[in-house]
Image 1 (cartoon, rainbow, N blue to C red):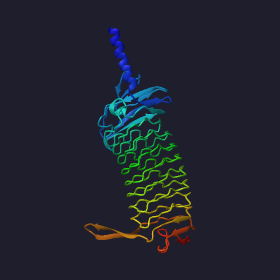
Image 2: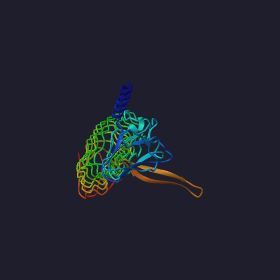
Image 3: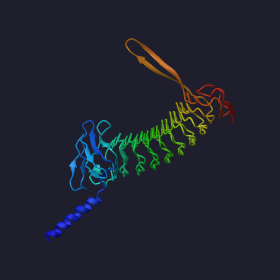
Image 4: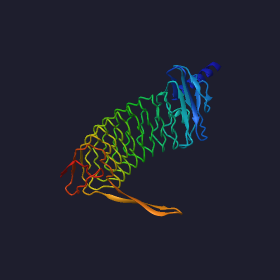
Length: 388
């Protein structure tokens, strides 16, 4: 009878062990190690096991655990309020050698890796930041996100070549902000199926991913403030932009989205006819291989909507616009101190420096009503004007 009970307990324990989907680190080289670094007094429950889950120890702050080549470490924790709390109160992994992660990162939340709900804002903020030795990401199965939950999660992870699946279709403000910034060996982006965006949701997501050759599809038709801002900035290996079907824009929605993409040869169509403040600011700035701008059908401009949009596009030779009036404004600032009182102001426009540094000869296509005005903020000197 006792033997049967012991056998039953053993089978239950084994079953529970296999049912859990622990975050797992596997060493891919000798002299590998891992640890955690807590910032701002943050001190989550993080445990590790080097014997397949038989025994567990708490992972102490600033203590590295050696992981010999091909050996595995399981990690778990019970943190129902999240691993990190804010951008200044967070926890990061420290990794040396070469380590591949697998299993679910959610085992740090529920101890098993079963939950798909991220419990708080900034939950995994900068969790693997600057882990240059990380060769593979863990699973990120969450379908319910929170503000900045993955912010900067893999920033500077220069050994990563692939990104994890991101199954969430409902986003949160800045949820993927800077997530893969400066992952210079990342070649392919994950699918991004969401059609309803939130403020800053993809802000700087792939900024500086200089090996990224293909962008994901971006099916959303209604945008949010800063949603795509800086998303592919300085992705110098990107040759083609994804389709951008949105017609309902928002403030800064495409701000610097492809700035510095020096190999971009084809821009996406921009069908929106109603613009928003700074919606296309510096969108293609420095795209030196871009020869033709997308058609810009909007008949009325918005504040700073095209500011430096094609600045530095040295091979750009054609642009076709729909607006009939140049939009100039005057911004001012009141300066008040004991020794002085003055008003400083400067002339601004919706097209400020938008064609600065383009090709010396080109074609500008516009409605008959648009007054001819030459300069970097209007029609470049030396360009032929065609009225339609």
